[in-house]
Image (tube, rainbow, N blue to C red; front, side):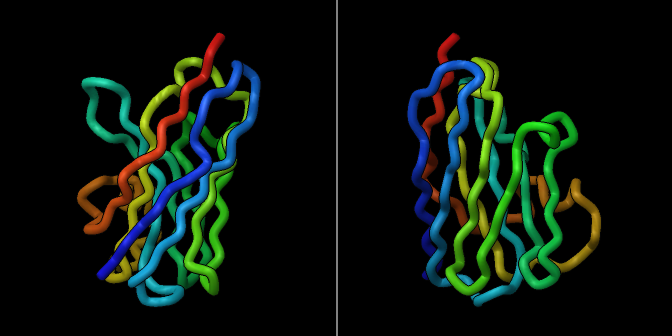
Length: 130
């Protein structure tokens, strides 16, 4: 049984930094892909950043590349998201997702789509105040 547990969310002032962490259990070590998504109230989840674990390929949404960095550790089955220069527009629920069967297609949009992932965490809230 796959389980994804997020942590690290909270409240921060604009310009601050937060690092989210996700610990996965039940995923085949080093296989498939993992990702961070976020969801604004009343909106669909959108892809933030992802990793294809076997090759260590990272993907970050174009609009976030200059502020967000994704890290992963295959041995520990963890995924982290460092978010710098946060703005109130980053306020959202952030979700970790994983799927150890997703193929390598070498295209970032594939890994930033919700339909790519079968397993999801419960989410962690990030609130940025001005």
